Amino acid sequence: MSDKFDVIVIGAGPGGYVAAIRAAQLGLKTACVEKWVDDKGAAVLGGTCLNVGCIPSKALLESTHKFHDAKAHANVHGIQVGDVTMDVPQMVARKNQIVKNLTSGITGLFKANGVTLLQGMGKLLPGKQVEVTAADGSVSVHEAENVILASGSVPVEIPPAPLTEGLILDNAGALDIEETPKRLGVIGAGVIGLEMGSVWARLGTEVTVLEAMDDFLAAADKDVAKEAAKLFKKQNLDIRLGARVTGTEILDGKEVLVRYTDSEGDKEIVVDKLIVAVGRRPQTQGLLSADSGVKLDERGFIFVDEHCRTDAPGVYAIGDSVRGPMLAHKASEEGIMVADIIAGQHGHMNYDVIPNIIYTHPELAWVGKTEQQLKADGVKYKAGKFPFAATGRAMAANDTDGFVKVLACEETDRILGIHMVGGVASELIGQAVIAMEFCSSTEDLQMTIFAHPTVSEALHEAALAADGRAIHMANRKKR
Ligand code: FAD
Ligand code: NAD
Image 1 (cartoon, protein in one colour):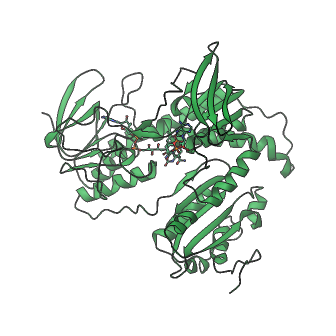
Image 2 (cartoon, rainbow, N blue to C red):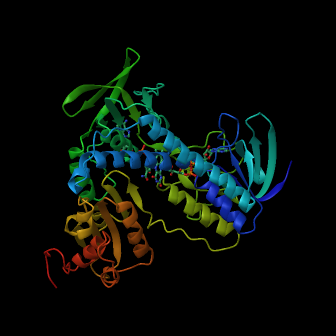
Image 3 (tube, helix red, strand yellow):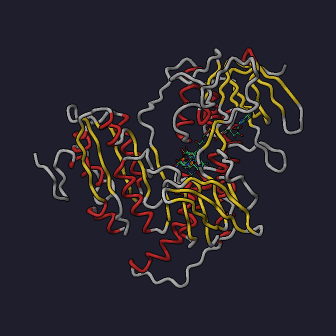
């Protein structure tokens, strides 16, 4: 038995590394265990998000957006550009450098905050002991007053499309394609499918997305999903709904034949690469000894209460391995809440106000309830909607697609949901989140001064529109 810690965190993704830093800030003696290693056997920090998720995907989205904008829209501004070309290996190398900078930054933050890094596979034993098996095979056991499980998630694999080196890829493989494919297939029109489909469609790839459900983006507000479907169609994303993949075949070692069934019968497509993006599942393999006292729910997530407490006293779990949306900011905030609770503080996590963003162009972003959820719950609500096309700043930016929609309680005026499609929706949604976190009414937003000219004015106008008071468009009803 080696050192005793106040807190041992298992997993150094955005849930685990943030929990470890916060715990150390609060004066707790903290260690973080991470199994991921690089080719030299050194621990890789940052988890899915920094290495094969949020950050690399956004780096590719930014590069390809700039490329596409220069190619397709520069002339609108009077800018004449020659033949715009993309050096894909350079784009991928830039993405890798950003990942390296950020992940090594966490090593620095651990040092600065006094977090002990334990490289190895962590396993929770009874009595809050953690066994760590390092990459070199050595085993050590550490004891803690509290343990935070932050083991994250892994991609779901489906039998009809087994991963095949260089051809059938999961989200990690999809981030390392080094040459623009002529034809790309994607299974799943969820977040990853739309983001990665957009990356390659912008570079001229013919992208076909096969989605099993009949509804497109069923979790989004219906207006957002409808607008997004229309815009993606214009961007040559061929999204086929109700398409159930039944099998795949590798042709001549270089193409993938994908068989699927939809309402019209059996069909097939041939693509150069196929990305499988059908969701993720919690990663708990090897994490828990049989007698650890931690229980899983029926879907394999670590079972926790609203304060992320597991069934084992002093053991918490956070992030993708527990219920709730699989989002980096949700994982991080749970990490902070748990560290605060361990240090004797109250801890705060508002599960009703977690923003969701899909980083296509335009971006899709929302927080709170959708219109269909309010209808299903029988809530009497009012809605205000304002198009970016009516704001001067969006016109100046040549980025006028989309709208902001505010939903509020008819009786109390409290804002219940804000939904948007727009060029900078990922930034604008932050204002909506702050408004909802502070329980704002539409009147609060109506009385707030928004700088002119900014795209944020669309949020102001949508709040005004909820009461028929929008200034820069004709209102449906006047009060
Ligand atoms: P993870 O990030 O998965 O980290 C878990 C860590 O624990 C890993 O490093 C793993 O190696 C380690 N680990 C697991 N078991 C053990 C063990 N037994 N011992 C030691 N170490 C262990 N979310 C967003 O909010 N915004 C985005 O833009 C976004 N984009 C994404 C794009 C893609 C392509 C993908 C795949 C995901 C994206 N996500 C995004 C989701 C986001 O990455 C996850 O929600 C987030 O990483 C979850 O954090 P986590 O700490 O719970 O788990
Ligand atoms: P997802 O749940 O967003 O989408 C999966 C899609 O695949 C769904 O539409 C589902 O109906 C469909 N599907 C499932 N099985 C299928 C099948 N056999 N054939 C065809 N379609 C099928 O999952 P994802 O896109 O894999 O992303 C995984 C997680 O990562 C998500 O939970 C998401 O929260 C997170 N993520 C977030 C971001 C972001 O915040 N911008 C970006 C990427 C990933």
